[in-house]
Length: 509
Ligand code: XMP
Image (cartoon, rainbow, N blue to C red):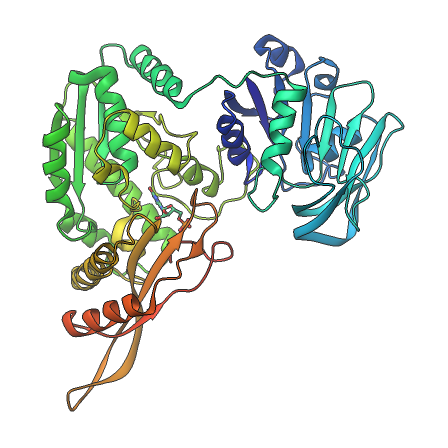
């Protein structure tokens, strides 16, 4: 296996998943794990992630410097490289020009790490600091016009550094470079498969749960369905699933979830009708993070009440994925920055009352889908676009009311229905409607209207960490607009969202 030491990078998990893509088992661990502990774990390789700090700042996260002498290959990426170079005698400084985005990289030593990489290759940089001087023992492997040490290796120790990010797709030959590190340097054999993940997780869940019961929230999304499928395999009769109909679900969603559940699972299912209590708590609230927190809190309350009816319910299972974890600020003691409070991570009340089981916490969406198919879930569930835990509340900008949810639900059904009818549902990653708190003037028949605007959001993405807006055909957009304006009361204008992530996010709140 390979260990990724996490220094608070938004990309730590992306590194891990690229390693898994090469069929090498990989774990993300704390950056300050001691060299002794790492030696016990005996990984084939160690990757030091990037991170938002500067190595020369007081309190910057560091690794145990003895790890460089374990004889285990180390690859430092960005901050990780700066740390390795500094620890082994080099100098890191803030650079006058911060470098973000694409850069042309020239390979100066096509040895192990750069084997089969083009002499001139495009890489993706994201740094303010860089290594300005390396110790004599280091040799440069690649450079860019502003960065003399874009890649380095130590002459005696198996220590390598990359200033750019090989894990992002914009680094054209990043896959080859990481693959070289894993195969040529770490000598891994690449035999690990996602199926092993399912078996290992099932075994781990069985052991942890013992004879207790597990409550699992169903949302209609693929994540919770895969969690339920894993748990059903692991502990079958000890599982109780709960669907909270919070009034923030899409059109006919609750009915569809119940139908699918009864078709595919032989477990206990409770449906809680909680629309009124959610909407009452949300009345008058407009601030997005507050909305998310309220919904998270109310969810847990519902679970607790429902779980109280189940004897010995000790665990709560959730379909939290890695992007939820990292964008909510990673682990509580980790160094990553907080972008949104995803309700199933940051919005949890302190006094949880359950022990959490999050078997998908290390996975990305596409890996979850593959896992779902392996577990025998039907394509209809596996390929459904994701839907956020806080539901329509984060798509009803500003205050949430039952009336606005009704409007949004109708419009959303038209948007998704038309995309499906055009045969483009599988080719897009997520499509939905957003009800804007903006009113504008229109004319319908002979009368003036003053009604809401609706935004259509449709994106393409592999992992939901970065996304591009989908270039939908104009005639499809036109059909959506005509139908929404004609059929949905209260909407007289439709706009299409053409923002990518970053700098926008996929959801509007
Ligand atoms: P953003 O808006 O952060 O969304 O670009 C990335 C992906 O995450 C989904 N999302 C959530 N999923 N709980 C979830 O389970 C949440 O609180 C939440 N917020 C956003 C979003 O729909 C997109 O797929």
